[in-house]
Image (tube, rainbow, N blue to C red; front, side, top):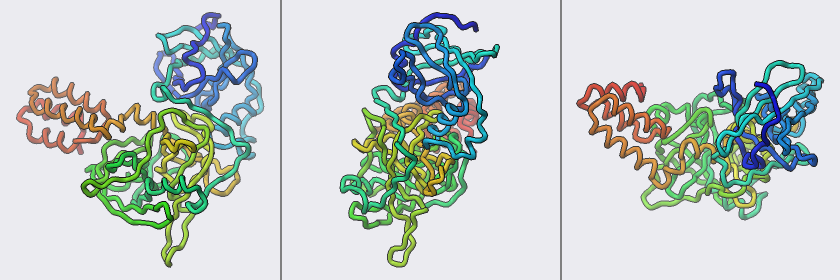
Length: 452
């Protein structure tokens, strides 16, 4: 594709989260990330990405002119790549040994908006000077963030701010019962974000009747939890006054994903009992964030017993990292699955997944990589469980599946179920497969559901 003066980037794609998709020669998506193209970052009317993902290297050279002309940008690779890598890892500067490995060279890129696709997307080309190849990107509004004001802020210095419950305000101390330590044994898995994960951690309630979230890698070592969707959960909670309570309960696994590293479960609580919970943030995302959980590095002794105390961590939303967040919230092993909330509203915005793998020489954990709750809800519909609408849709599908008689009709119904990306009612689907009179229906369930 030849670059040429054409059109300016639509205003709807500026100053809000957008999905940036790198396209291969055949038009297929070969990489993607979330970013914000900011019109406020330059005085000369040029808009620049705020979180140029290092995995999409030429996106580092992206820029957009308001006058619809091609935009040229000089990238000081050692400086600009280092900054992008650092900020998407939750630190201001990379450790010196990492910086030494980045070549000191200058690259020049030209960005052109090739065409507008629909009302909320555009096709963009980026060409490096002295190169014949052209990288193509599709930019579109990130649906999960509609209505949210997302704000980044770099800290003044790389620093750690972690506190005990006795060191935080009374308002923050009151949040403690919404969070609990999960004690499970098992192996850990690879996360889509890279960095480091551990199979132990924290969970938190998102409804008064016991729906809660944690990381997938926290529960994956429990065979019953993964294969049968029934989990026996041992929890420790800290109350607002600092005292601790231990509770064990059964929970049903309703949805999970390894790439987004989350698991949604429903605790089987005593009838009419209610728990305190975090509400989904509806307006502001960042820049100041808080997380609270049970990192194992803060182990203490209480009444001759070794305990893991509840720990709060304070920091900033620094950048997008792929489809997740990079933050300066410092966490350690055991904080996996902790809620990430806005510092002012206490609204839920994310779930801790990994440490970034960069210690920054501070010796107190790693910056947290955070999976975005709004993105998870957009893809998996986790908040549809809370009002029962997800379960109602799946129950309706099951009812239709029982009555159908053909392979084709059953396959169509199962495709709709699989699009829900849910584990709800899997046992009932298996029962239908076992008992249905139609061989075609049984074959469709076996092929689609892939029961073990």
